[in-house]
Image 1 (cartoon, rainbow over the protein chains, first blue to last red):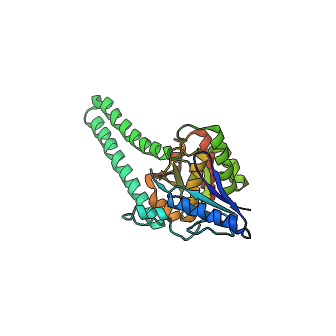
Image 2: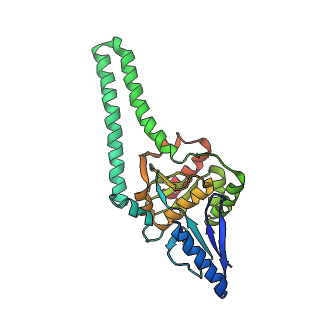
Image 3: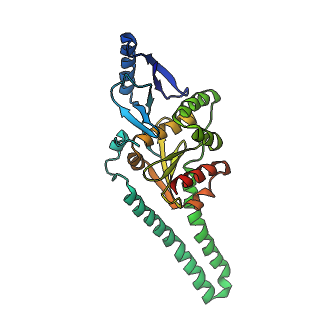
Length: 74
Length: 210
């Protein structure tokens, strides 16, 4: 089961869970994904040890998609 | 690390993308600045004592300035990885679970001990805290201290670290471009200004950078 996770004040929230063969769950996950991107979140997937990638479309084959806020110089 | 460009670099279009050569030049500039602060005070102290031995107290004050100014800079560098703000146990525990998923066993242990994450990169070994990061350069002798943070002050500490870690893993050079350089200098100068419990993270980074 793949998960869409948002890092937030609660630690993290699971916004959607899906399997690629479940169209309803996929549709709900895509909708949640786009909603969070519109709110300014950035979506990341781990692509290997020490590697991550930003994604702009929900990768249905990913295990976990993490939503984070932008960073800036302090 | 990935070759993709960190989207946050679009917010600082005037900055040149940081690379190893850029870091070397900025490091030399930091060293020159430190020397230009220290040398005049030492010279003044020497001249004062040579001209009039009774002016020794003023000469001592000059030497104190020569010592304090570099110490303040190093302290500013060490401060970038200090823990910030309050901590609610429940969100912190949830955030720790997610951060743990991003780390291997040794990194998790080191984070539990120090509150910092060590990450090997192309520019050196990074020590990531909740509101900044140290870059231990190849060879392990020089450290660059960067102020950088997630744009949400209410996030738990471990989530803040995870934000920076994910950004770093996406685009290391972009990460250094977005961050503000707070200090560049010898590792021992930063290490001794850090809280004792955080020092093993710098030592681990130095081993990886060596």
